Length: 396
Image (cartoon, rainbow, N blue to C red; front, top):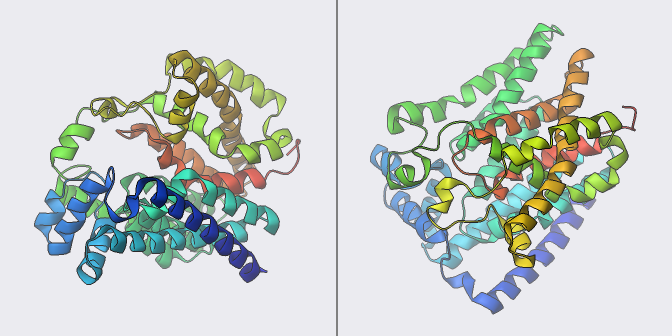
């Protein structure tokens, strides 16, 4: 059954992505030339293509982790640094990540048709396709993270720790996942006396060591000391509640079909009432473009923001739409807390508990970022699909 499901998923996705690439090539001719952020990503890629040293690790002009740039640099050494050659690696990494997402969802979601539908929902996300085709480093990072999620599910601590370490030196904000795995393992150890759980807790701690080594010894901070850090990060450290509001709203956007299917389980009266009362937070901390992005003319927070402004550009319209999605998303986020709390009361620290705890960790850590962007929701989406589809009836 798994091979059949995977085959259907890959065949349909390949055909859809292939058609999209052909169409975009006809409209823009993008395939042979670097576009947008690819231009400065290529600078880092070519730096690591020429040398991998402490100097290059300390000076590359990006704010995210170095591993994906190193992978592209090594690929460039072998096959050249032209856009088509690097895009081929993006395709390989993107489809690797998609295959891992399918495997994760297939083994977590009880109904295998629902698991396949959830995998298609992830593949249909506009960011997933764009990042699979463009010379961006996100899909490499996501592949490592999804591999870590699978290893965590299968209780393979050393494989989990290795993949998680690779994920963290690709994207620092992936720290939300080892935090959740570590806490879940400690609860199993202390409350349920599952002594073997210490291995997962230890693997979570060890997985952070390479990133900590970079931050303390090489960078002396959260990222390399460079022009990008000065422009984007400096002055933006701290907790940004409006980022939490944004991610709550866009979560509802990108899981909308599942919200419809599971509406009865999610929108219970007390959660809806609590969400309505909390909706005042939207107007206290209204979402919008990050200050660090505004200085470079980035007035949008992603594709959906662009779509809203394409329909009607008035600011009130954007906030009217986003507020409606906040009202839809807040009960969902609260359901992650509800299910986590229920599992703690029942002393049931299973996979679904870990998934919900990881989602809480995501929403708690992301407001500390210097930039809010819709694509940063991607690592949480498979977890959200699994959590939503695990809900069992309105009384659960």
